Image 1 (tube, rainbow over the protein chains, first blue to last red):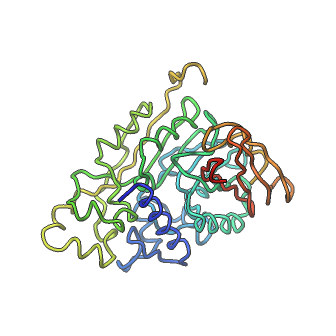
Image 2: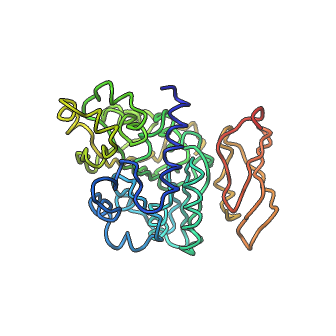
Image 3: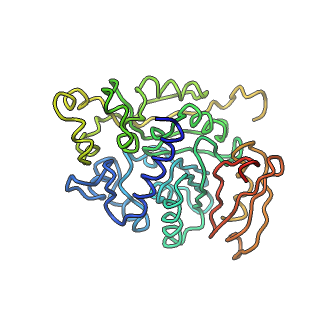
Length: 278
Length: 61
């Protein structure tokens, strides 16, 4: 598939997810497995308190970790959420940074932004905002953000290196990146790697783990640390019949353990070698 | 969007400053308006409080 086709496919898939109420049907979390959004969220690192803090409808069960919990946010921090969706992580971050801080969510799917906007109204918060934008072309000024978070989104980008370069650019020197994402520990068999549906389900676009960490380092980040890693259950991904069909026969065993959810932290060096612009 | 967010916003293409024009507001909150990048000659709309900053170039405008 061409890059622009992938881009369109991802936007349209998540537009459909946003338009649904409750269970998402996307294969990345809550559907076809008899599990609720809440049980999936508790399983990947959110607490009961987190679920209660965000406005109802903000959590679509699309994450693969809890970057907010790992980011050690401080009061007053400026936080940028890449691929903010309906706003769940952004609202949790807004709670942590308090009235002196602010949280900006960027997402390229208009339908997601509509939901985030409704949720912002429900929450009554004035320290969280959303923008329609692309994570490869952030509409955010250089050196203006304390913490960049992202949850199961960067794998969907067709230019992940550019996403990390942009995250580096907007972070203040000493600022931190904290992402949850899907990576692979073995290459996918060809029919899976070429599946558009598996791309929008956060798998076919995933990089090999070393390449993912290498992209973060390549953008200039230091102190890159994998804070956690779990095999992502296939059942959470392949609830769609089309994907189940692709996994018939021996394929299933070969990919069973190679799709992994990682939590990665990194820091923009304080003296960052940016030719004196910071 | 709140006006005090202007300081961390920039053009998604050239990363230059954006100029805010407000057509409807409620206190600090801009509901409708535009964000113009003079360098790119592009206007980014603000609709129902949310800026659309998907990158575009003057020829698409």
